[in-house]
Image (cartoon, rainbow, N blue to C red; front, side):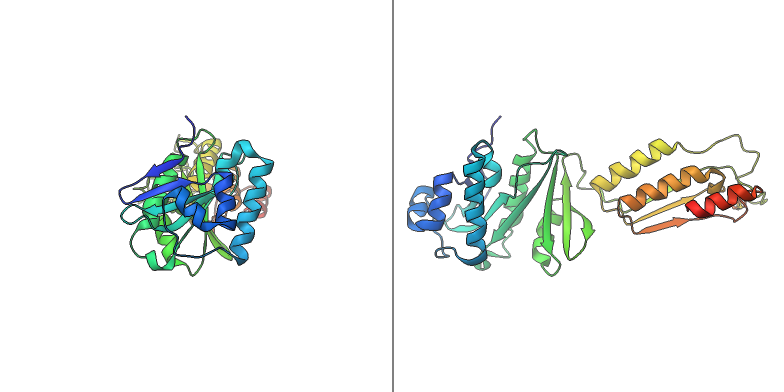
Length: 279
Ligand code: SF4
């Protein structure tokens, strides 16, 4: 199924601009208003945004088959046909089936929930596209309104740098939020504390490191995981597994990585040194 030229929500039309309409946005906004049957409060575009549109026009001319990912969509209020903002894909989906979106709302239309409505419908449409499994968005740190739009649409923040980065995965459950992972690496322990269930004699071995790594990668892809912990029993009886877990967490930018140990995980001095070096 191809991408529709127009989406409809309760209060909005979201209209995909053709290449010629994109050029009208730059050169003849009155004609664009007639073509889209809408009114633009803002006059001709200029400055930084004009550069962006001109670059997108060039992208479509160079890659017409993918124009859907290069063009803009006008967000038009049904009630009075006013153009309240725009939304777009920033580029074609990458090999990991990720695509970034951008959006903007005219100041006078803020605080009405229009952008949440538009982003929600846009993402729903995007996930009908077989090339897309993850939608990414960037917000300015101080732009709390934009962050709230993404939160309401189920996005999870996964990176905080100079700007904030958000992600919505096709398979993500918007009603669940996971931010910490804990692994009981093993029930075996070098201690013999009377009150405790864990004993060195326990027949149970450790968790499977490969499965643990997959779990971390999957959860970090879909949620904002900010802490991880390994414990037991005595987890460092399986130092290799512990190290792989923490390495994977580190590679996924999990900031807080904790380990609970009784400190008596081996009588083998070489093994102890390896554990300390790796962890
Ligand atoms: S897990 Fe802790 S409390 Fe339990 S036996 Fe080991 S050292 Fe003792």
